[in-house]
Image 1 (cartoon, rainbow, N blue to C red):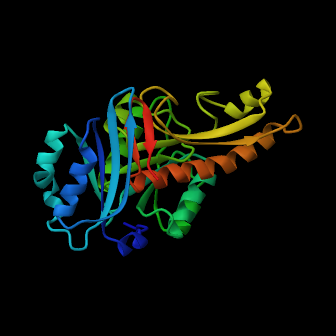
Image 2: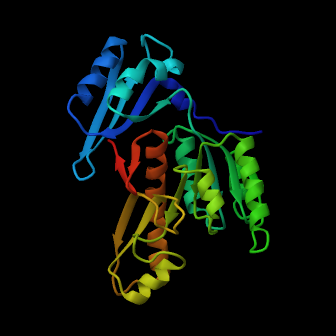
Length: 294
């Protein structure tokens, strides 16, 4: 089994804590005191309060050098603080990079961008698997040393095709699935199996022009701005929590082909940002929204 490994991720040894809880006084002080008591050197800390939903959201990252206990035992040590404030929390370790599967159809621009950024150390994850319902990107996968699996998808074999995909995700121990212009609608079962673990790129500035051929419909509508949107996949098509969006101005001189070309540039950047923020544990979700921490 071949694999691209995030060697650059091994250069640091940090823990990142993501927290969501009801907003009340004393949360920041309690977290800071807990980390201080256990000899943590805080590297980054950011927070957000949502007054409408009475929510407190926080991301804090610290150096594990000299930390007083094994992070594997974090839950029992942190229980008093988390229970006091009714917290939902996640702990992510830089020494355990996420394993990412990329799904793609025929368009290879987003796939090529992700693989290139990963090779250059911009995406600190492992990419062991590419799945496609076409053979077009097989040579690109081979060039980067990533295992490529062709799985044909038709209206008659969708259940069997997804079962093969699930088996591969389990075999490769996948943590995140990236739809890099994978032009198939995932079944409700697929989405339910991987909640908050599937990122899609849509070639439109959502919520405008959902579904197929958005550039053609944007051209017909005579819009002056086009966009691209990365979002988590939910049961409702193109309505999952938005992670990042980008726009570009167009004019009456631009034809459909011009919109598509400009859009592809946006898609590459928008998707790579979303993937990077996810693997760096910078995203918290609530109420079909996302908070992106710096």
